[in-house]
Structures are given as structure tokens and as C-alpha cells.
Image (spheres, rainbow, N blue to C red):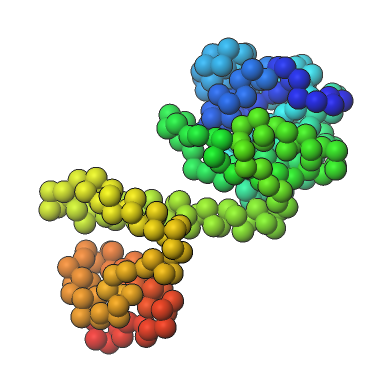
Length: 268
């Protein structure tokens, strides 16, 4: 059993967006990279100067002290099963916000979670030192080890069990995925008029800054905040049909949040 995070003691399982950023941050401590795709395993392995493998059963050959399983949520259980029991009893963690740590039990009885609350794309730089990591472990001694692993990358390390991670993950969807698809809607609105998405960048940056400074409720502006139903109706008419339900739902949320009546569908 490894009692500390020693050099080249980590096997990284996964070669996707999250795994790529973890690989770069932990490169001096990683001994091998595994992925179902030999090409992706090899590419990421070469990137950090370690072997890349596609046969998960070979993880045990590296006698790891720590195994990080950084794959899609639905793949955690089958990947753990494919790795199988590792004799070195490594501390085995995954990076998921929605999967319980018990899914890793085929690998080791020493299991935990290393969940970064951030959106990742492989080739988009992320300052991991600012990213909050949420940790959990089945054994008390291992929790300190997971925390130490997280602190190699970030200054912001917190504990969160499965129930709390589910809350954090939903908050992440509202914070990242939904705004992103709304920006796609903005592109569709701007493009026919010949404007690039970049024209709203200063507005978005100011909106986010103000929301965190004053609070989102107090920072809210616009026609729904004012209860200006005439403007809401005119904008609905101007929108493509497929975007009108989105506009209405979000306007109603703002109206209700500020004690105003929802839009009267009979007058729209």
C-alpha cells in the first residue's frame, strides 16, 4: 500500500477532456495512461512522456499507488470491471460528479472521488489552481491522500459526498451547459443581421461580474425585470418560432422571481 503520493505512482485511466488536463497537471507523477482507444492513449502518453495502453487489465503491471479513472460517467463501472482487482491495492478515484465511489470497488477497496467543478475541453487552457475540487474517500486515511492529490493542482479543495456532488453537478449544468446553449441561441439571432457573437462579449462579461458582486437577483435588468409586457410581446414576435418557448420560460422565471405575474399566454 502506498502511504504517500510518490513519483510516477499514478496510473491515469482516460484520455478525454478532463483526463488531458489532469495528465498535464500531474505529469511528473504519472507512470502510464490508459484508454479504450489505442490512438488516444498513445497520443496523451506521448504528450507527457509515458506509455499509452488500451488493455485495462494491464493497469496492475504498473503496481500503482493511485489510479485515477477519468472517463464518461456511464463508463466508470465497465472500466473498473475491465481493470479488475489490482494487487497493490491502489487508492482508486474517479472524477465524476454523478457516480458513487463504490463503482470502483472491482479495482480496490480503497476508493474515492476527485471531482473538479469546471468545464473542460482538451485544447482550451484551464487554470486548475482556481478550480474547486470536491473529494470523498471510503476510508478516513485515504481522504487525506485524495485531498493531497487535489492540492497538487488546486488551492480550493472541499469535501462532498454523493448527495452533495449531485447538487454541485446540477448547479454546474445550470452554470455552464445552459448558458452555453443560450449563447448558441444568441448566435442564431445575431447571424442573420450580420453580427458576430463577439458583439455581446462585453455585455456577458459585465453581467457575470455584476451577478457575483451584487448577487444575481439584485443584478437582474431587462423587460421581464421591469414587468414590461409590451416589449416581451414585441420580442416574441421577432423571434424564430423555436426560440419563443425558451424566451417565455426564462421571462416567466424572472417575473416570478421579482413578484410579478407570468406572461398571459392569451395576449401573446
